[in-house]
Structure formats: C-alpha cells, structure tokens
Image (cartoon, rainbow, N blue to C red; front, side, top):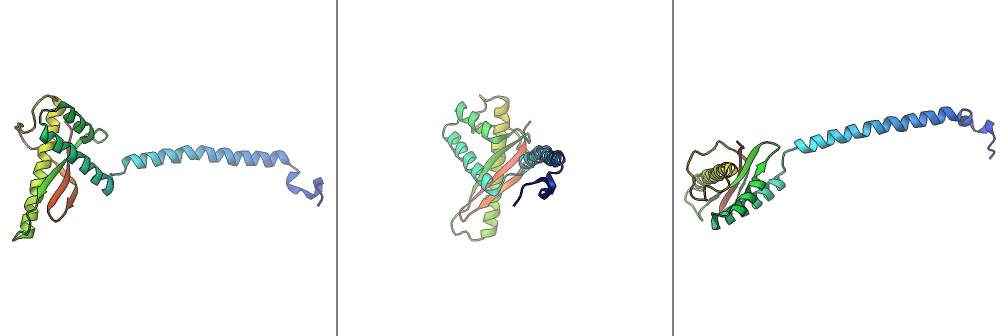
Length: 172
C-alpha cells in the first residue's frame, strides 16, 4: 500500500476536510446545551411519582404524629412546615388518616366514612400549617379554630384497616 498523494483522494484538499469536520463538531456542540435545558425544564415540571408521594406521606405522617405527642414543639412545627411547603407551586401538603374497623357490616359505607375522615384530618393539618406559617408560636396543636381550607386529594392509599391520603391547598 502506497501513501502517495494520488492514492489518497481525500487528502488532495486537507483544509477542506478539516473545515468540514470542525463545522460538524461545532454545530453539534451548540445543540447539546439546548437539549439539556429542555430536559431540566421537563424534569422540574414533572409531577411526583407514586413512590415519591408514598414516601412523602410517610415522612409527613411521622412528623404529624410527633407533633401530636408534643403539641407545643416549635422545632417540630418548623420541620413540618419545611417538608409540607412546596414553594415552586406555592402550596402545602398534609397527610390525613382514617381507620377502617375490623369486619364492618357494610364495607363500602365504612370505607367512604374513613376516606372522609382522612380528608378532613388532612385539611385540619393544612389549617395548622397555614396558621403556623403566619405565626410559628400559635396555636398549639389541638387548639385551632377557624375554617377548613379548600383542598384536593393528590394521593390516596387504602388498605384493609386504614386510609392514608395527601391533600394539598394553596399557601397563603
């Protein structure tokens, strides 16, 4: 095999070949950041998955139970506010809990009652979160008065003996 200029047709104009290669490389580099920005926006706008919501429900419920045990704890309220506040959507999330008794006569009616209880329990926590955002020192848990904020259910898990749901409302 000979490496003379005649047997290498692409090397007759090496400047042209290098120019084309550089143009291809540079045009590819420009597009990459644009697609990365689009992917980041899509990831930020994506709703939480079932697994993420279930994990959030467990974390919120755990803090809420600690507050029930220590109703005057400012530290626990601060932790709950930090976890419950979604600043991107300007909303609060809270967990409601409803029990289903063992062997009910009318399973469907009892389950609906447990779902309503879970919803109202979650809304009660939303009312506390709104109040604590304005003044972290009051009211103590168990001493709130006022209206239940409008809320929507964003997650619900029903098992044999309980209903757990996450409710969401606008942060004022």
